[in-house]
Image 1 (cartoon, rainbow, N blue to C red):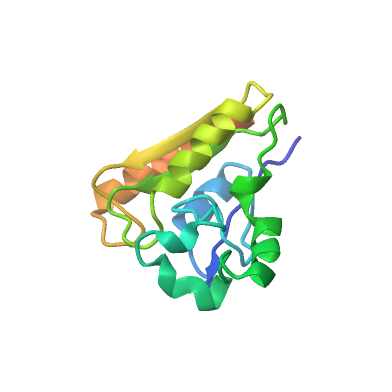
Image 2: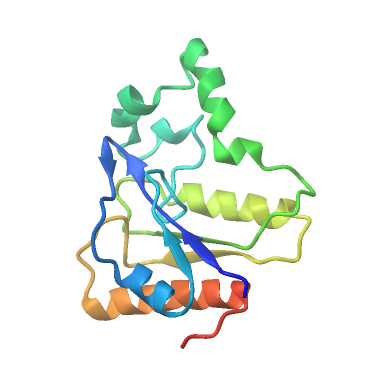
Length: 168
């Protein structure tokens, strides 16, 4: 049996996701998957263009954390790990689901929109590159339970579809 691994996480602003109950992880494991949670930053409300991030919304306040491409010494460091600037035409990328929304007041939704468009135009694979764009939600919590369930259901449907899994 091939085990399917869901690798997800968050990292930024000296905050990490700590061990605790997760409906997402429980559902995944109950359906035969393996779940891992490193301390990093994944593609839900993502920060992907590290050379221009500081020009949008409140991101100018993040320069002490991430640095600024306007500083010549920091430019090369930011360029070296900026996901947007490492997309290669013809590369066979896996399926990707980006998540963002109009209500995100922290990370400008343009990051996910333009990365989705760039990957769609660049990928050499037949795997889908999708953008879940919610016009009424954003980065923070505060969603009604029905919306949390709907979003989690859509995320799991995408993963099960791409990994050939069936809910148990």
